[in-house]
Image 1 (cartoon, rainbow, N blue to C red):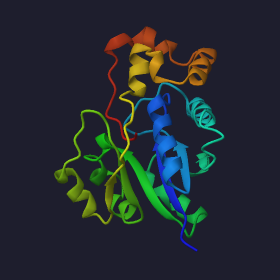
Image 2: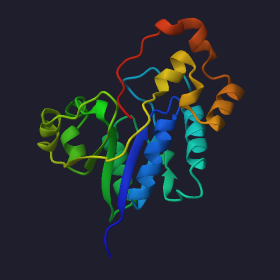
Image 3: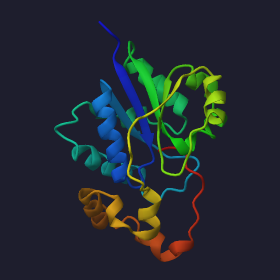
Length: 207
């Protein structure tokens, strides 16, 4: 019996966008299991609490059901250091092969991640393309030297971001169910009122 192929997809989901939904749909179709977690990103200042972001990710996954029944939201493996998340996953799914899913904008940061060599020696790497970001051999080569293989997903992801919603309140980038939850919880109102369009955001470390 062949090992289970598992995609590991972590994101800050602040909030999850239709881009996240497209990624999850593609992963569900191409892997035996897609394991998703929401965590605090050390490179970001989050506007929603971890509990709120987890609830919004639950709504996003629910929007894919029942077609994508092989998506598992796993808050128990979440950690801001990805190496610890992978180690938890390997303990749970001991005979599986793991593929870590990242956005193209993350590649320059990967060699600088905590225990990057240990991390990348335990997983394959799958890069989700992003509009306007080229994935060049110069980016891939130093990552592969750390002990992994790098593939680029053959999928078109909507050119949207969570930042577009937080800064501009562009409702087109999120699902209706997520929009309703945000309005019910009044999550991002303080950010708009206090920081406006000039609020700066540090670099992202996840899709």
